[in-house]
Amino acid sequence: MKHRIFAALLPVAALTFAIFLSPVQGALAVGYVECVDIEQTNFEPDQACASVMVAHPQPTVIEVPQDNYTLSSYSYWKVITDGPANVYDGPGGGVVRQIEPGFNFVIVTDANSVPDWVQIQGGGWMQAADLRFVPPSYFRGVNITDGLRQPFGWVMFPLFPASEVGGQQDVDTGRFMDKYERFNVFASVADEEGILWYLIGPDQWVEQRWVAIAKPVERPEGVSGRWVAVDLYEQTVVGYEDDTPVFATLIASGLPDWDTREGLFTVWARAIRDPMSGAAGSPEAYALQDVPWVMYFDDGISLHGTYWHDGFGYRRSHGCVNLSISDARWIYEWTGGNPIDEETGEPLTYVYVYSSGEYGQFGISQG
Image 1 (cartoon, one colour):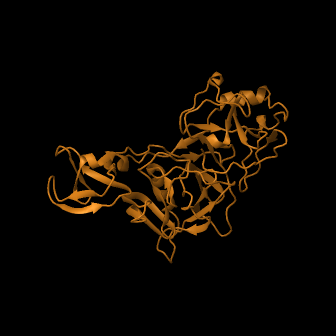
Image 2: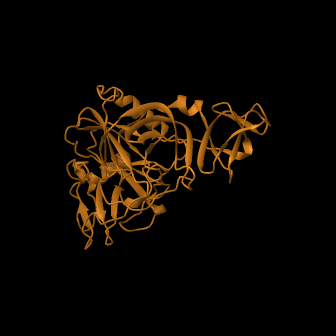
Image 3: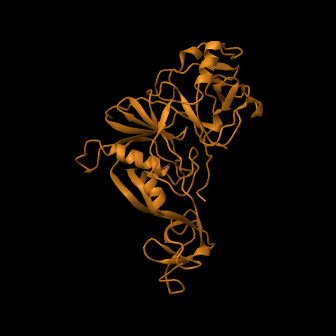
């Protein structure tokens, strides 16, 4: 189930056509004008709109570069023991410390030289049976080329669009969409239960709970330069240069009881790599070696790269804003060009956390 409460965004008495509005909080931008005047009763596009949808099934965007250095230089392994996991001074040697139960990852530096043993960052050794290799996500966000005038989004799991509003997935649409595939949005409609549906192609509809949409938001007062907007409802980040959206991607924000706090913040510390841990002694305990591309903005809450899951678009963190490794590096380096904040000594970067709709108590647990 998706991460938000699925409140009616449009009247529910009847199906209602929604033209995308000017770029303000929660609204979408005006897209292809050929599709603006779709009939409100049957939603049948005219030939001009149908031609546009066929010609532009995906947004005209450019994926940000893959962070091949980080992705190829580090090997991430999850600790899978039920109890404490031992760290030894050498293969078959003495125990030097223990990793307490929880959501724990280590970085393996040598997995091949000694059978059944691996060396971890810091020099210790662990039994290979206590660990499981987890490949990091290779997902990447995109540079926006049109100022986000054409709404677009990503699907959260493999699917076929429905052929009508309120319908089931339909193989006869002839369009299979893989996880994270991007699409243009040409119209939006609320069904009789108030659930929003997006028209993404001729007779191709996706439900709001299946997708995440990049939405523009007004620049908060006093903010300038390069800043980021975190939309907790859509689980997206949009990067801006003043009023112009230039980047968008998917995130994973805080779970229930670990909610990412809304508000306007500034980045107070940055680190290329930083270990993270918390909630020691509780079922929510976690310890992560060398989290990459970290930008702290709300006390210990940060934007950072994430190697332990590929579930972007859903809430699943302990409050931080999880990004793919490549996206986190792009934002880290892009905001590094901002003027220096005299107080913190860091590039002055604003982080605006808000919600474009009501979101609820759904998410995916860390484990």
